[in-house]
Length: 390
Ligand SMILES: O=C(O)CCC(=O)C(=O)O
Image 1 (cartoon, rainbow, N blue to C red):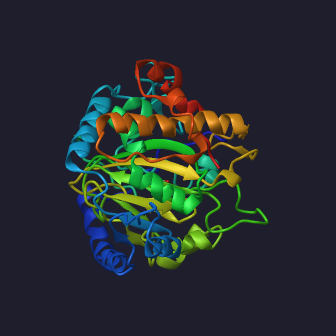
Image 2: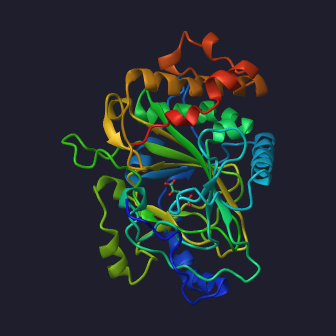
């Protein structure tokens, strides 16, 4: 891999000028978003099947905003865990970490949990990082003179960093949605937290997430699974993820051509995925999406948890975003999937009045996957070394 700059050079624009440039785009995009008909509560029938109009809207648009998924008590737990995790972050990345993905260890984990970026930068756009999946650079305003040198923009391995996040992973409504979209035997991908602090949060340049099945003969609009994105604070048009509805059906999107046609990184037809705190978006990983530098005054914290159809992972040979080659065996999938069952049990202990989700591939293995002190060490510790990427 080529050496990469760790940030897109800032252009001569203040955060306030960037925010002003976004204003008209935000108004138009927010109107388009509200007209899509793809938001509302999770609706399950007596058999826990997702309402067909939700399924239809998800496949039509490539995303759906589930409102009110996380209640007040759980939201408070999640926010507190994020605060504690961020408070433990070193102020700057380890100088020996990759210049393209500056990161730092914090505690005992095998994989660095903290990822950093320069304030308001675009770490990926126009580089060949992440298998080159971010072809255009976003506009990078110059951060204010009192900004820190680095901002934490990502936490990796949510479920071992934050117990509340493990409990959210076992959410029966979200897992029922996963089952409805991917089938009974859905498999996990990874869990990360996107942090976009006001005046600091970097851009995530336009991209599609999938990397493996684009040229497959049996490629389809669901070939690379989806991410849940649970919002711990209101997610506004100025700081949220934007998307081009319907692009998950089109194969590889030519972002350079779209940016040229649109005249900038403000792609024509895009919509913001606005949410209130406690909402959770399901987003198809083939959907064209990205987020702008956060020049707003509001923080965004998003917990991502992704899932795949098993048929797109089992015995599949692929390359991780780092370029490393890997084959996903049945054993590996089974071991990684045990964390779903662990999350279900952890949630049941915190919310005993809730009916737990039954994850079909592990029915009968509940006893081996109980949440307790031992499981933290034997099952959860470094679980994210078994993350799967397609
Ligand atoms: O949260 C963001 O700003 C970007 C999220 C994203 O690109 C992703 O989940 O793939």
